[in-house]
Amino acid sequence: MTAFFLQWEIDQQNAMKTIKEFLQTQHVSRRALTAIKFSGGSICVNGIEQNVRYQLQASDILTIVFPPENPSNKLAGENIPLVIKYEDRDVLVVDKPAGMNTIPSREHPSGSLANAIIGYYEQIALQRAVHIVTRLDRQTSGLVLIAKHRYAHHLFSEMQKQQKIERIYEAFAKGVCKEKEGFIELPIGRKCDSIIEREVRSDGQYAATHYRVISQYADFCHLQLRLETGRTHQIRVHLSHIGHPLLGDELYDGPLDQIKRQALHCKELRFYHPFLHKHLTFCSALPADLSHI
Image (cartoon, rainbow, N blue to C red; front, side, top):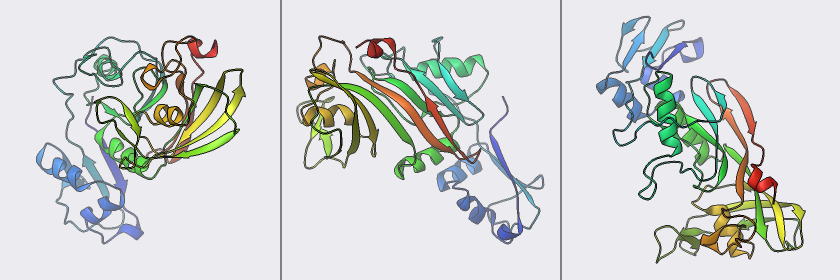
C-alpha cells in the first residue's frame, strides 16, 4: 500500500509562512519532521522537494510524505478475528473481548489485540506499526481506539492529555451504593510489594472517576462510569477503595460467585476525528456474561 501522505492547498492566511511554521499549526511534531528528513519521507511544494525554511505562497500545494512504518520484529501477526466497529484511512475502532491482552505480556506473549491487528494489516497489505490509543485490561471488554499511523497517534495523544477522548464504562460492583451518583478524586500509584497491583496513595498520580447508579440490587449495583484520567486499573482501584469492588475482580477483593472476571465493559467511545473534522460516537452492547448477571 502507498505511503501515508498529507496535502494542503495554502490559503492567503497561511501565505508567507515557512513550511516549518505552517506544519507547526497542523501539529506535525519536530520528531516527525526529523523522521521525514532522515528516514525516507519527503516535503514537496507543487511537486518540487523543498526544505522546511521554504516560504509558502497562496495556492501552493504542500505535500508531506511520512517515512514507511515497520511493525516491531517482536510482534508477530496472528490470524485472530477482530470485531471492527469502524475503520477509515486513519483510525480503527474494535470491540475487544474479555480474556485478551491489549498488548503481549510475559505471561501472555501471544493472542493479544496487537497481534490480531498486525495479522489484519497483513491481510489487507498495510505495512504499519500498531498504535493503540486507548488500552483495556486483559479481563475488561469493550471498545478500543487504534490510530493507523504515527501522525494520527500523535494527534490522539494530544487529545488524551486534554481529556478530549471520552470513554463510558458499565460495571457491576459489590454492595449497596448510598449515593445515586458520585465523583471519586483520589491519586493512584503502584503498590509497593506488587508489580501489578495499584492502590490509592498520597504520592500517586491524579485520578478522577465519575459514577452513576443504573440499577441497585440486594447486594450489588450496576454502574455507569466516566473517566477524567486514564490511570492503570483506575476504575477497579477507585471502586475497591470506596468499598465497592467490581464483581469478579479477585485482585481487588471482588466477589467471585457471579462472574470469574472483573465485571467491566467499555460501552461507549467518543472522540473528535482530526481528519474528518467531526465528532464520532461508537457503542458496544454488554457481552453475555455481564448482561446475564
